[in-house]
Picture 1 (cartoon, rainbow, N blue to C red):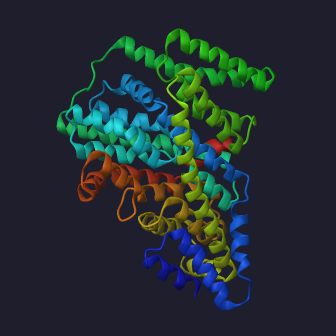
Picture 2 (cartoon, rainbow, N blue to C red):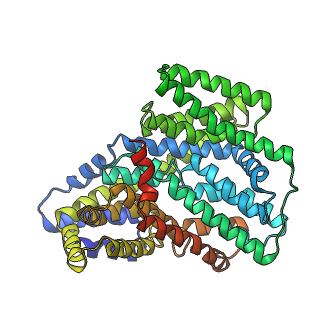
Picture 3 (cartoon, one colour):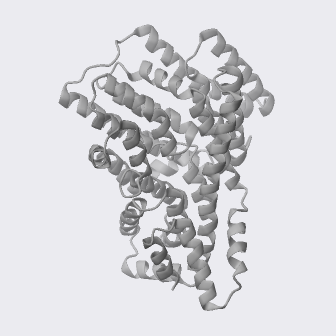
Length: 464
């Protein structure tokens, strides 16, 4: 009854959150075993979670970075670093997404923010609109894989696993995806005879490499001071930030301070300085310091608009989570999840077969449901089976999120597809065809990450 009502609501075009909550209410009224107030109670308790506080703050941090002119600095830094390679702007597109992923946490923010600059620049340099859209769409999937990540926060809450472990687990998969996408750009550059898009300039390259070196050395020096030499953590970080700002002023760095966002976040969680939720607040403070006081590109009027947009986005996400809480509880209470688990385990007890079937299901679901809704529906169904087969929940979480990110590139519900179609001016059909070749590196990444768990679990285990 519960599943039938849910499918009827969905087929009628009712939003997925309303369909989940509505189906649960109809079932409770039909069965008569529970009071209707249970729906409200379970929805409220579903979002009464400390880790979920990270959601609005990560959304706010990404919006602040996007509206404070940070995207232009990231683009210029990536251009200096790899723009001189053959097919340079394709590489810039991917590297820029890697950096912006450490601030936004969502694929849509990446596509809408950095994608606007990248597609315009690539068209001006003679690249086809289709190629520009394809590489932008593929690189946008890095947003929720490289930390911080909103889908990881939602999955961690649903699966009762560490947000920090998921964040760290996403780093190596992000590197693998980046390398495969850059190989794809190199292939197109060789095939079409493309040259570099900017002239090779040693001073410019050396400045970019120096910035990259600073990003690597600065947190390492702080870690040695705190962990090895016993210096007080908070005083050391504050002193290190002062030195960093002085160096930025003296050497006029392009993107050192924005790139430090994910470094500070991961470093703070790894050293126990703050939790993932507190890290989200720290990311917002960092974005406000850069936007208001350092670069002075953020105005109060813009800040108010960003806050309103954040409230709207957060309300949507949390309403889906709340509705999924009662729906998932009803699925468990009515035995649906147990029946599905028993059916799958009767069909196969091989983890690799289950992962293959789960991947196919998640790719399909990702084409029809928004990511948060898909996670909240799939986790109660698939995670118990995964646990019984001995699959690590952190590994399974990264696999699930990557599947759902690939789903964002496809009709009928692919949000990244619609965003890029609007930005580029292409029809949905032409945008879809432009994205198809880029499924090759993404699906190859998915296969590697699915069947080679060490790529996901090596760093979290190393940092335990």
